[in-house]
Image (cartoon, rainbow, N blue to C red):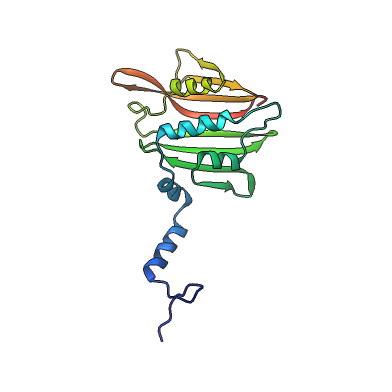
Length: 190
């Protein structure tokens, strides 16, 4: 009599299916997230702006992991032993990666989004000026801190929400652009 693996309903499980299940279980979570989280850069921006439009108020304490996970719709995992923190990541259709992290510290949630572009000097699909205009359209005020030293950082805020956008410089077709590198979000008192 042949022995084999059987599903809970008693049916035999094909060895290929078992191998696939084992590969997915053993595959690191960050590699799984890359396949499932691809979206256009503009969609990522829309989700961020929509999320920020719903934040704030006198007693606002930042964006908890569950809210960030739901709004951004990317693969997400909770911090090991820290249910008040979490991390999500993805790859845009344009080919650059992003990571989001939120954690509770100093009485509020601090959220950070980092981008990674393999060729930052020639690629800009997350333009800081355009992103800042969209934030201003939802009532945020502020602007860039300009100096001869780069990168520049934009500071915007409203309703007790502070957003800092650090940039890198990209030159495409002879035009210089400030592109989003890091976004930090938290309550004003931080």
